[in-house]
Structures are given as structure tokens and as C-alpha cells.
Length: 228
Image (cartoon, rainbow, N blue to C red):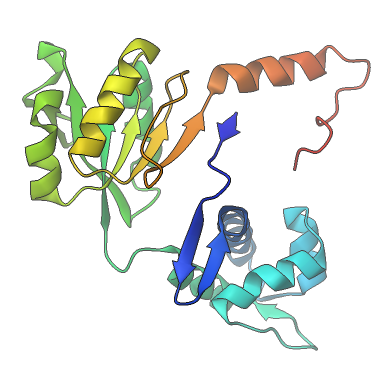
């Protein structure tokens, strides 16, 4: 289950872009990549909207943010639209990410992100287990969490993922915020109490599994009402 702060917005000059728009743009780019891989050169707005499960009107409003209009006769050029969305979403250079917790979940996150997001790289890991600090893990240096402030400053890190037990998550989050982290992805099954200027997204895998298991027991397994 993904729980977000509803007020999160990205400011662009005088404009603000809501978090939901950003989420949809990420989805559009993923679909466009698949289309490009399959050899598709052009796609109409109603076709892309259907693949993203949104209305054509919503899609066109979202794409106004990337300032690209398709051709009335051929639609959007897939590669160009993907590039325009990427220019809007991606950092200008590689953005450094930290991972706290190098247990089973942390190692799985390492494996998942390896090579998938070239502009988002896990450059530092943290733990308290002596067997997991002062060594390289998946090619990434691992430090004791007490070194967070120095490491974050030296590596310019302001994004972090938390993959620690729930009992330790709040303390870890406080340490990371003090070290300069401005955005957190939290995999611990606890809600974090953080300053309003710190963005946090909670991924509760347990709640998600319970939800899908519940609907599997229904006479007809369907999406929950109101879900995308």
C-alpha cells in the first residue's frame, strides 16, 4: 500500500504540479518505453490513455506540463514524447540515494535498482550490524548509521530508503533528516512523524498483500472500488 502526503507538489516557476500528475507521467513514460521497444513509432492520445487507464482528456492535461503536442494525423511520436517526459522528470545529473538497512529487504532493493534507473544510484548503505558495515555490499560502501551526517554531506545525498524494523524506523528517519535528507521512501510498517517540508512515501507490503488476499476470497476477484 502506497501512502503519500496529499499536499506534495512540484513547483515550476509559478506553476505547481501535483504528485498525482507526476505519478501518471512516470506511468506514461514506462508505457512509451514498452511501445518503443516493440517498434511502435506513433501513438494517439486515446490509445496511450487506454493503456494508462485514464481518460484522453486527463492525459492531454498531464502532457501540457512537458510542452509537447502530437500530430492530428499521426498522434505522438513515441520516442520524442518519452524524451520530453524524461526531461521533465529526471534530474539533470545522477542523483545519489542512500539505503538504510542491509538485511534481506535491503539486499533485494539493491538487486532491484541495479541498472534500472541510471540517474538514481544507491551510493551509500547504512546499518548497525558490525558484519554489514565498513565493507562493500553489491559494489556499494556500507557505513554505520552514526556516520550518516558526514557521509550524506560528502556524497551530496538528500534521498534515502528505509528498510529497517518498524521499531527503529522513526529513529533512523530522524537521523537522516538531521543529516540533510529531504525525501524518504519508507518500507517499515510504521508511519513516520517528520517535519512538513520532508517528503515521505510509505510502502506497506503487508497491507497490500492483505488487500489482494481479501479480494481473492470474494466471489469475483475485482479491484477495490476507486482504485486505479
